[in-house]
Image (cartoon, rainbow, N blue to C red; front, side, top):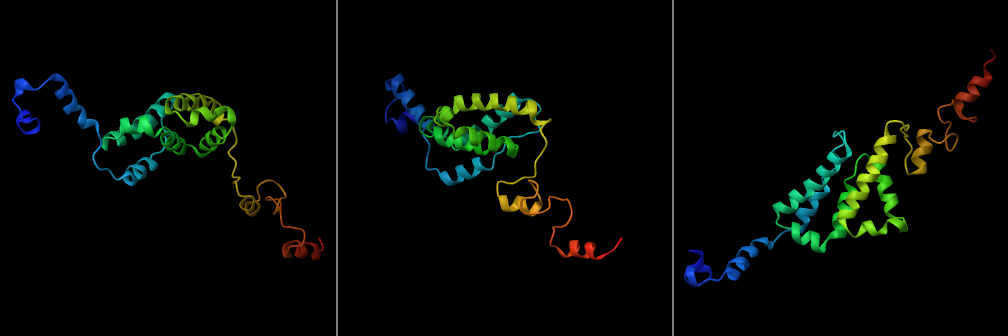
Length: 183
């Protein structure tokens, strides 16, 4: 049936090369809304419930590829969109402290090569994840934000902005009331 309607020929007259070309057409993506693909990939995050680094990274590599396979874009993405794949994987890192560390290290000149190729990037992140998981349990969790004003409001970083949880400020009504009382 394919021979008759697609090739307009009989089965015995079709060459192997024609058959190969016909079936390879299936790898070419049809009309795809790339915004839908981007939105689906952006929702992915590293699952930190997995106890070992290989599981975390393998899962993070497999989930976006599953989405790309669903839209028949895997080959095209790996040929033409390496930077986007790296950016998506970088944005999917968890926990936030590790994500920030990866983003900071990617800005360094010595790590620029990882921005252009997904395979070395994943190997590099796996190595960073090993180091991170080693000290993650021992590092104190900071409530400090990147925004210094938020830190001042919460009393983070000592006396910068507030009292840091050490009582009222010198000129506050609470302090004046306490000084007016004679003990």
